[in-house]
Length: 295
Length: 226
Image (tube, rainbow over all chains, first blue to last red; front, side, top):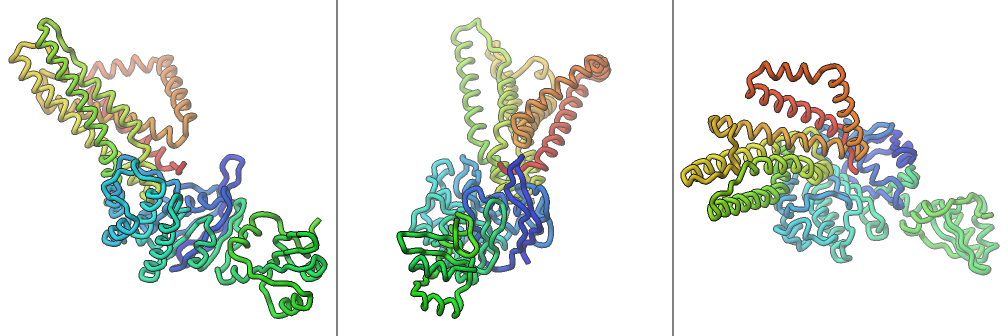
């Protein structure tokens, strides 16, 4: 096990950023940490890397508390969108810094990545565009080869081509050098294929912690005549419900089984799979109802 | 000690430019002042280089912290290593500044006593009579003390915010008032008067450096990201 978090809470004054969060991170897996803005994702990652102190609860990374433990910290690389850089430093200075901090740093791979992202190594940080700065973070995260690598919105300002390059490089390097990767993002559909396990955090609470394959089959949408849909969803957990005239579409939180498919066919309803992004919106957007009938 | 080296190098990268610009300006002022004194004979330039170096050291101590500190913390460097890297940088900064100050003071004495020009830009009367190592040591200690004091103020600010600085001011005023009421200042004066000036100055610098370093370390130990 890479990390174990138990009943972790963090408050800032009267604001609760995290509330009784518990989970574990296993070795060599890619985790997706999803949540809306202000849900507590970055706070959680700051706590995991001992850059913040918990209000209550415990964090163990590589078997011990990460606070001031070099053995632990040198095995974690946390790349965040809001990372402060030394503005006068050149990209080559940042790479030199990383080579001293991360014991598994691969200088050759770093050079390849800099070339792939077209980053001029002698340019100063203050002269970089937002996208180039994100690319610097990506190079740090990948070339560090840290056993626990955390990316928090790593591609702000990156164009679609560079993002695709990142996903491809991540997958290729992960298959050669398996490690635990936590990817926090809002571009859910883009990273969907990468993720093996998913955490969804909402208003400081962990509302979903499951394998990606289970999550992908966790919900489906059913649409048809209002009366028939009502009959179908009765007793089932409905995450989202939309009506247009006499037509109704409901997102049902339940694995689709043969019985349900048969019932839907009898009622003339159409069943569609729900994407991870749709599921995320349903889980974090509005309150779900039991039985389908909304007030 | 690789992370300490990494932090130190990042400070050097960040501080190098401002250090060179400052010394460039200072030497330009020196050259201009000397030229004017030489051209319009009768004028004089008095001790102003060293105070400028001291003020620069204090300001550097305050402003040099932010980016290397948060960058290193974000990259997973221990606070202990960040502190050690910072101190290493301040010692190098103090030593380098003191070497430059001492060398220019001695050059100034050599060159301008030869030309009979009344210029004491880097040199000062009190230190000029002392051996070179003593002059260098004095400048090193004073510059280090100012750098560390600046670092201490920055650490308080980064740890506790603006309220921390207000609190620190309040505590300092309270301590000052207490010392004044209890006759603490007189006792301190008597203690210093009993020592030879060199010991008194060295002792004061050392105590200030140690206290400010220790307090800075305590602030950094519990520092969080913003």
